[in-house]
Image (tube, rainbow, N blue to C red):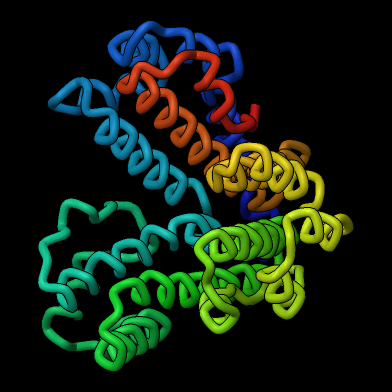
Length: 333
């Protein structure tokens, strides 16, 4: 990869970084009395176009989706290599594939769940799928779809649609980062896999699932060996914490597990993972030539939108500012 090819893109990205919401701006939103005030405050930011474009002013999900689409479109124009954007966009592709398969296999209309962000033209993929012309699909996507359809035919278990497509998604994701050979991208994916595998172990432990089930859902290509992860299913949280004290992700992971022991909420592990990944990307602030700042800006924007969703949902449910702050993620700026 020619790092110099990203010079203009990095320059444009630095300007965009200055428009990201900082901590004082987020605090102002947290202290707003209701959703209406949150939207009024956001009207003075780059979210103003999204708010103006949505027919129902209080439809916060449509506002956030509009902004997400706008940012992905803009970053595709900025990045000379689409794969830099695909690393983050791919999860929307696989989400949409899950919806598409469930619609057919379970005879349901789930079209409202489609997210119009991704690395591929979903309408074209769906047309191929509906027509049965699988040969025209990306081979990786075709393999995933055919495997899941065969599995559903054999087992008739809707839960396995999500499980199997997640495995194919992370395999596909790792292949992209392996092609690019950018350390940040590789570590971002590998560290995320470690967090998710350990979170899965905690969840399955709570659900009383057995080792065979865990072996089916565990993700490959993390930093932590698969067998080491599998051992944790029958271990206490304290033993897990000791086992992973020297892992790359140990600081946030151990804090997350400790918090989980106190609260019993699995969602806290996602929060610590999000914080770890956003802080991992802060190294891009010192990069002048290369794709990292473009990627990290998109990570930051995704996290900003997640933060806004937490605030908006909380305001809709009359949750106190103090409780909202406990749920917030770290920021890139």
